[in-house]
Image 1: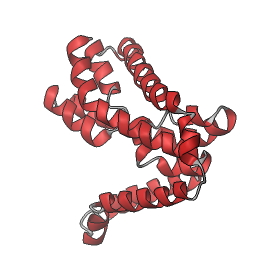
Image 2 (image 1 turned 30 degrees about the horizontal axis):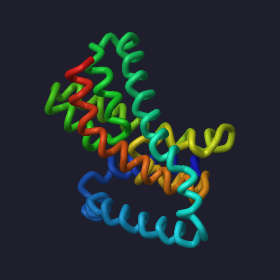
Image 3 (image 1 turned 120 degrees about the vertical axis):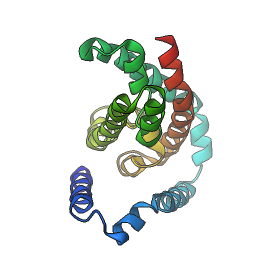
Length: 199
């Protein structure tokens, strides 16, 4: 799955580079919401096939709160560490980290707040987090546990990296992954200005 994801990314990059005016490709990339809705329906069907999934999830109520909270805290702390490494002010570094993988929103938000250069860095940071997630989820789920495998994905655990969660975890953790992504995505618009103002 990881190799297929990398091949697909490389192929998409090459097609986008060499065929930038291809209307078919542009229309396909514009339909990502449709693909996401189809994916969510299929995930719902898969979850529905699992008997007693809601009862099982009741045992994981704490996980549903703890996992996104720990991801957010650890990511902001990572931003603090990166401030010392990169030389950027701590408020900028933590705000970049607070994008939590949601590159489309975080890049634009940081561009509005700080400027195009930091906005681009934020975009690339979140995009690299997503790519890193594709590479690490299989190994983390195998060598550690399913709950930990959600961490690299952050906000993307409800959409783009959900396929990896379906492949490498179980139905319970797919639902937790969906909820985690929703919670983190809801937090990002508040975390970025918070970090810029507080740190």
